[in-house]
Image 1 (cartoon, rainbow, N blue to C red):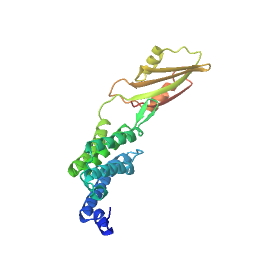
Image 2: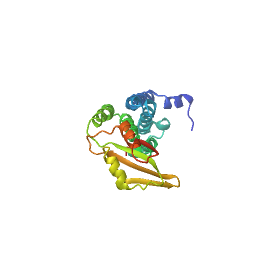
Image 3: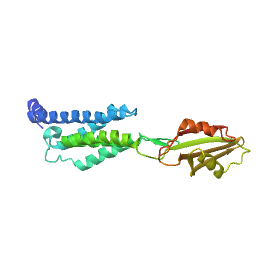
Image 4: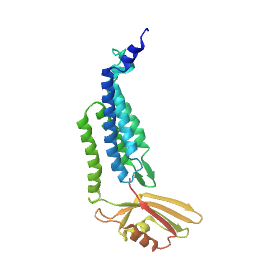
Length: 249
């Protein structure tokens, strides 16, 4: 292939190529800004993934979709007739890849699961990037605002609507104590909580028996005070040690 340097330069840096590169750069900037807005909401609530994570995910999705949209300009545009990217398959790959990233943000500790909202929102940031990449700027801005509104307003509503609070309890009793499910359920019901019998797990050893189970408030309008409940449990008969933590599942 005989091609002068001027022809090669014109192929990769023509006026039309400058316009395409400038448009893609603006798309990347828009994806970064909108992703950072969503990330700021998570960061302000003390979550591990913040503005950088969300901004990078959104910008990466924008870049991939923008690149596919201008496949006719790949490799200097010399083979524009065969360069046709499948947008739906690329979008599917982006969403699947970001889904794996979101899965790594979900943490399980005991009976408590956290990170679900952050995982969903980082997946949503890739959707924002895809919308920016295909040029739906107004839709991308709308999705960003709706995403922030959902996490802010619905979180405020959840904290005020009635719900059943649950705790995960782990306690140890001496081996000579013949505890039963009915006994522990009755003792704790007098404290304003019910025991979920299906969650009971026992660990028996020579020095004692370890009970693990989940408890909930008697009704959705009753708030469990962890400090008061801890003091009341310690006053029950024959309890040597115990621990208590929130249960969200």
